[in-house]
Length: 248
Length: 299
Ligand SMILES: Nc1ncnc2c1ncn2[C@@H]1O[C@H](COP(=O)(O)OP(=O)(O)O)[C@@H](O)[C@H]1O
Ligand SMILES: [Mg+2]
Image (cartoon, rainbow over all chains, first blue to last red; front, side):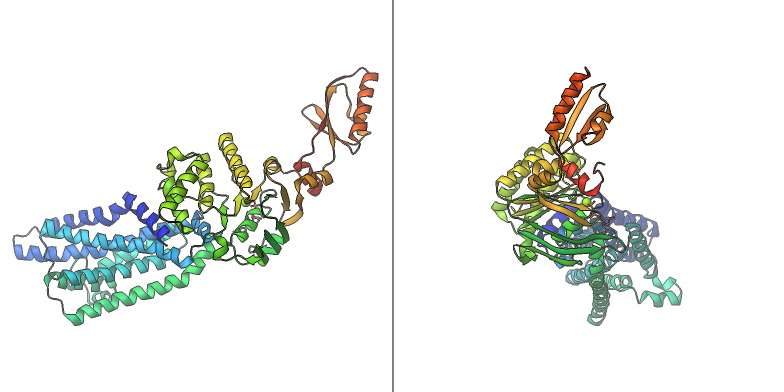
């Protein structure tokens, strides 16, 4: 498994597209939207907006890892690497693990870097860093599990990119990552409760402010884990079909 | 020794292999020959357990192929399948690790293989900067990292420069000298004739004939004579056997080649015809395939 993991990490580190989607773009968005929404004179209100925008864009952009996940798996499948590896003693589930783990590292690093960016540039408060880290681990699991399920299910890279856009952008809009939920119609607020983005965003904000309540935190972690676990099960179910197609 | 017992493989509608049985003795170079679509790659993917659902049985040293057996088996795929965005060194490292090589012995082996495939000075370069021939050689190198006993090569010389081809031939000779078993699939007859001791002919999923190349040549190839000269008529030659034309010369297939040659010489003398060339043609594997299938293998 290490064999696969090291190669994946090496490739990811060189991948400029990945760095752009995962770090540069969210930073650009954060800077842009903060400058647009904090034109008022009230410092307290501005800081509140910043405290929402920074985790908002983190939650939105962690989902873009799914594009890279789809690309890696579809490319391996279509150019015969998956089949090639089947001729080696590598167990097929170690192949999956070796591909998946590097993505989790990337997402964790992404979240940490973006929070640090918020801290250094906008002086956001990171009141409960341990809780932020725990939340980050859970959202990482959720996102990469959904990515895995999708990568093993879609037929083409384009389809994967389209679905990622829907999940990342649609989810961001419906979860109040772009504008406060209170400004949206009731039914949309209800929908938000079914989306992992909403829970992650809420709990991130609480942990930043240092006002986390245990029951709410557990609820968020439960939702994130349940969605991630469901996605992971789908991925495991899809995997044999993916392998079958890879043998072509 | 690798034994293939009565294997049959269907893809949706096409029957890629029909009841094929072949025994490949250890320490030999065994050619799998047939036109495109004959089923060579399919058979190889079954041996390497990439394809697992098929009828029949394949055994390596009398045992079914398991993860443990895979450790003794190296596969060179028909397509170039490498990680293009990392170095040759890293590619070899990955395959070494997949076969449980570690630490110093891994690094040592990478250097050895780089030298073997003639890429010692390019080891640190990204594969995407390599020429086709270099990638082909690395494709082979990846299969050799774990020093397997059985090396299975699927058309390793397709579309490469003569220099790389020569290099690959030398590598195969070295593997043979080291006592390895090599399975070599190709649709280039000359290559198989040059490299291999045994051959199996595949055509449209069926194994038509197999055996030692020298024996097959003796059994099937009809001796032939190459005749070139002015004024020699096809009709004259046809009384001795079948005749085909090639670049203004005739090739006469006959079981009594020497006798026919004598006749041709005296015929030419009598009629004052000039003979430019008249020689016995060494029988070719290509002729054997032609005899067996009635078709040529050329692209
Ligand atoms: N994945 C596949 N799906 C359907 N048919 C296939 C597939 N792979 C090969 N075939 C068919 O099986 C036959 C044998 O193919 P192959 O083993 O690749 O032959 P060769 O390697 O001798 O050129 C061909 O008719 C080919 O079209
Ligand atoms: Mg082939």
